[in-house]
Length: 226
Figure 1: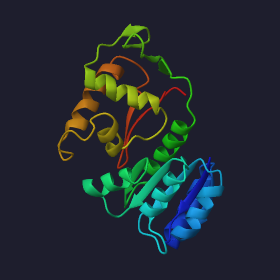
Figure 2: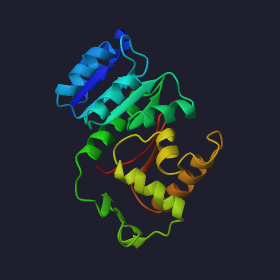
Figure 3: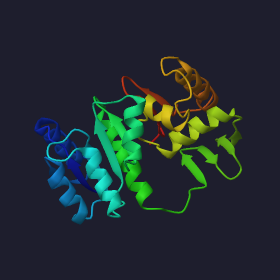
């Protein structure tokens, strides 16, 4: 994907540009809001990564200007301001996603790739398949090795999101947003409990195990036989 990074912290920008290139993307960089706005207007980018605190023109003003001009390129806002009110302001300004600093690069990458997919509508997938694990969205049915696996509604949503992002690390923050919608205290162990129950249901008695904990990062579904 072509990615425009608008970030005035040169050390952070250089790290992100290098990491994006290594992940197969084509990044450009602007160091202030005015240059970023000019590039975003004309550059034909798939995703914009916009720091909120920028010289000359702040990030939210950049996003508002783009939306006013009809530029619909997906925007991920980066900010050290991570409170709920700050995220709400960023999304209401026209941002599509909001990531608070400090962040894990794996999460940033997953988020911009999700924004890129969202910007290119494709036919809705009706089945997710990882090895011999199958989730049929039309039948609302999960099987492994042909054996039905009964799941509670939250377990089903958790597995559906993990399988949609198969082979990628899914962070606790991503699960909070997409499976629980922030509707509980993030300090509780509810994610761990549900992951443990789901792992028992889809992995116990089967080989190889698929639901993996990535220490310090999150969780991943992958075909261990691959």
